Length: 85
Image (cartoon, rainbow, N blue to C red):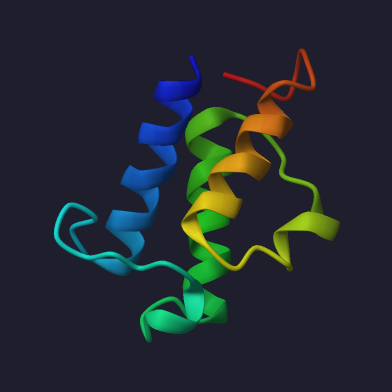
C-alpha cells in the first residue's frame, strides 16, 4: 500500500506542476518555480481527493519537498478509517 500512496502523490505532483519526475529532480519546493503556494494547495487538494483523506493543516504548510509530502500522506493514511485509501 505504501508504494501505491507514493505513486499517487507523485502523479498528483506531476499533473499539477506539469513535469516528469523521471527527468526532473525537484528536491525541494525552492528548486522549482512552478511549485508556488497556489500549486502547493492544488497538489494537496488532488492528493486528498485521490486518496479520500484530509491532510493535517498544521503539517501541510511546512511541507518543503516531495519526500516530506509523501511522508505526511503516508502517516495520515496510517491513522485509520476515514483517513486512508
